[in-house]
Amino acid sequence: MSIRILLVDDHTLIRKSLRALLETQPDLQVVGEAPDGRTGVRLARELSPDVVITNMSMPDLNGVEVTRQILAEATGTRVVVLSMHDEEHIRRESLEAGASSYLLKGCEVEELLAAIRAAAR
Image (cartoon, rainbow, N blue to C red; front, side, top):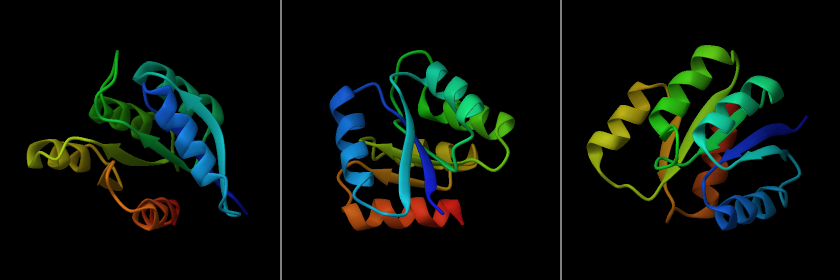
Protein backbone atom coordinates (compact mmCIF):
# COMPACT_ATOMS: atom_id res chain seq x y z
CA MET A 1 0.00 0.00 0.00
CA SER A 2 1.42 3.37 -1.03
CA ILE A 3 1.83 6.40 1.21
CA ARG A 4 -0.16 9.17 -0.49
CA ILE A 5 1.65 12.54 -0.46
CA LEU A 6 0.60 16.12 -1.17
CA LEU A 7 3.37 18.64 -1.93
CA VAL A 8 2.80 22.27 -0.89
CA ASP A 9 5.53 24.71 -1.97
CA ASP A 10 5.44 27.98 -3.87
CA HIS A 11 8.51 27.04 -5.90
CA THR A 12 7.64 24.95 -8.95
CA LEU A 13 11.17 23.55 -9.25
CA ILE A 14 11.08 22.29 -5.66
CA ARG A 15 7.67 20.63 -6.13
CA LYS A 16 8.67 18.97 -9.40
CA SER A 17 12.03 17.84 -8.01
CA LEU A 18 10.41 16.40 -4.88
CA ARG A 19 7.81 14.60 -7.00
CA ALA A 20 10.51 13.06 -9.21
CA LEU A 21 12.51 12.00 -6.15
CA LEU A 22 9.58 10.58 -4.19
CA GLU A 23 8.14 8.68 -7.10
CA THR A 24 11.35 6.62 -7.37
CA GLN A 25 10.20 4.95 -4.13
CA PRO A 26 7.78 2.06 -4.65
CA ASP A 27 5.86 2.83 -1.45
CA LEU A 28 5.35 6.56 -2.09
CA GLN A 29 2.81 8.21 -4.40
CA VAL A 30 2.46 11.96 -4.97
CA VAL A 31 -1.28 12.60 -5.35
CA GLY A 32 -1.17 16.38 -5.74
CA GLU A 33 0.76 19.64 -5.72
CA ALA A 34 -0.16 23.08 -4.43
CA PRO A 35 1.64 26.38 -5.17
CA ASP A 36 0.40 28.13 -2.01
CA GLY A 37 -0.95 27.45 1.46
CA ARG A 38 -4.66 27.98 0.76
CA THR A 39 -4.60 25.63 -2.19
CA GLY A 40 -2.68 23.13 -0.06
CA VAL A 41 -5.35 23.15 2.65
CA ARG A 42 -8.10 22.76 0.05
CA LEU A 43 -6.32 19.88 -1.70
CA ALA A 44 -5.63 18.16 1.62
CA ARG A 45 -9.36 18.26 2.29
CA GLU A 46 -10.21 16.94 -1.20
CA LEU A 47 -7.46 14.33 -1.62
CA SER A 48 -7.05 13.06 1.98
CA PRO A 49 -3.32 12.36 1.62
CA ASP A 50 -1.47 10.39 4.28
CA VAL A 51 1.31 13.00 4.44
CA VAL A 52 1.55 16.64 3.40
CA ILE A 53 5.03 18.05 2.82
CA THR A 54 4.83 21.81 3.19
CA ASN A 55 7.19 24.72 2.85
CA MET A 56 7.29 27.33 5.63
CA SER A 57 7.30 30.63 3.70
CA MET A 58 4.52 30.83 1.12
CA PRO A 59 1.88 33.23 -0.17
CA ASP A 60 -1.51 33.32 1.59
CA LEU A 61 -0.74 30.93 4.47
CA ASN A 62 2.63 30.02 5.96
CA GLY A 63 3.60 26.47 6.86
CA VAL A 64 2.51 26.81 10.49
CA GLU A 65 -0.99 27.91 9.49
CA VAL A 66 -1.16 25.25 6.77
CA THR A 67 -0.26 22.64 9.40
CA ARG A 68 -2.88 23.91 11.86
CA GLN A 69 -5.65 24.00 9.30
CA ILE A 70 -4.88 20.64 7.72
CA LEU A 71 -4.68 18.88 11.07
CA ALA A 72 -7.92 20.52 12.22
CA GLU A 73 -9.78 19.41 9.09
CA ALA A 74 -8.16 16.24 7.76
CA THR A 75 -8.18 13.38 10.20
CA GLY A 76 -5.43 10.89 9.55
CA THR A 77 -3.26 13.30 7.55
CA ARG A 78 0.20 14.10 8.91
CA VAL A 79 2.40 17.09 8.05
CA VAL A 80 6.14 17.24 7.44
CA VAL A 81 7.58 20.75 7.19
CA LEU A 82 10.49 21.13 4.75
CA SER A 83 12.00 24.58 5.09
CA MET A 84 15.10 26.69 4.56
CA HIS A 85 14.53 28.42 7.94
CA ASP A 86 16.84 27.16 10.66
CA GLU A 87 15.52 29.34 13.48
CA GLU A 88 14.56 27.48 16.66
CA HIS A 89 11.37 29.51 17.23
CA ILE A 90 10.05 28.60 13.76
CA ARG A 91 10.86 24.92 14.28
CA ARG A 92 9.17 24.97 17.71
CA GLU A 93 6.07 26.76 16.40
CA SER A 94 5.72 24.19 13.59
CA LEU A 95 5.97 21.25 15.96
CA GLU A 96 3.57 22.88 18.42
CA ALA A 97 1.09 23.31 15.54
CA GLY A 98 1.24 19.53 15.11
CA ALA A 99 3.86 18.88 12.43
CA SER A 100 5.28 15.37 12.66
CA SER A 101 8.73 16.67 11.80
CA TYR A 102 10.61 19.76 10.69
CA LEU A 103 13.43 19.29 8.21
CA LEU A 104 15.74 21.73 6.50
CA LYS A 105 15.83 21.72 2.72
CA GLY A 106 19.52 20.85 2.96
CA CYS A 107 18.76 17.51 4.64
CA GLU A 108 19.80 14.17 3.21
CA VAL A 109 17.28 12.35 1.00
CA GLU A 110 17.25 9.40 3.41
CA GLU A 111 16.25 11.73 6.26
CA LEU A 112 13.27 13.06 4.29
CA LEU A 113 12.17 9.56 3.29
CA ALA A 114 12.43 8.39 6.89
CA ALA A 115 10.39 11.38 8.10
CA ILE A 116 7.64 10.67 5.54
CA ARG A 117 7.45 7.01 6.48
CA ALA A 118 7.51 7.77 10.21
CA ALA A 119 4.73 10.35 9.81
CA ALA A 120 2.59 7.87 7.88
CA ARG A 121 2.92 5.30 10.66
